[in-house]
Amino acid sequence: MNDKIAILGAGPLASILARRIPRSVRKVIIGRPKAAAVALADEVGGIASDQASSVRGCRVIFLTVPAGEVAQALTEIQPHLSAGALVVNMSAELTVSDLAETAGVRIVAAKVIGHTDDMEQGSPGVVVLDQVGPDEAGLLEALLERVGPVVRGDERRVQAALEAIRDVMVGARDELRRRLSATGLPPAVVPVAIAAAAPGVLRAVAAEGETAGREGWRYAGADETAASRVSQ
Image (cartoon, rainbow, N blue to C red; front, side, top):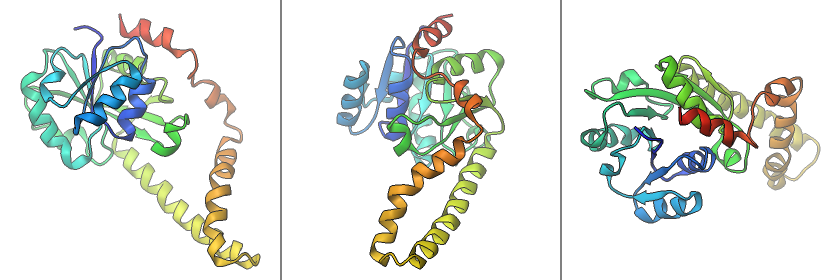
């Protein structure tokens, strides 16, 4: 197959993929309503469609639709997949084993740890690959390396990681509210102060001592390397 890929969905994660997958890779954006797919495709130089049949001829198909729509999306695209096509489930809530009954479809996992709002502004996420062979891993690493660090691991841990982050952050938010109120700030402005200051402070704290990890992730200038690996 050639280097054409499909992104099924036109939401925040689809937008991040479309913008960060190398521009040399031909992209088909499949979304409903079609207008959303058209807007995203126009931005990244891709092709827009609202038809599942548009996956025909695509080497990789990224499923970025909500978890409740994944099974239906698989049913719709299955008759149109080319031989050897790789379907990538990106829903953190569903594992490959949850979708194993889709006969004749090669499904792997690529799960992202990151907040889409920040990632849309340029922040990296962590991509966890699972159920992939060596060649598949290499292909996906080439396509996704501009999203953020790409590692191999148990996809089930991604949902656990997201839940852990949320649980800890909820506790931190409540503690911040208590301590900021104790400083005498009016209750109405406490949430504003947290929203304005906390994300930046958290990023700074998280980055302490982690410069080596950040330097290992290449964003700018990754196109040439990724493109050469995809075309192999």
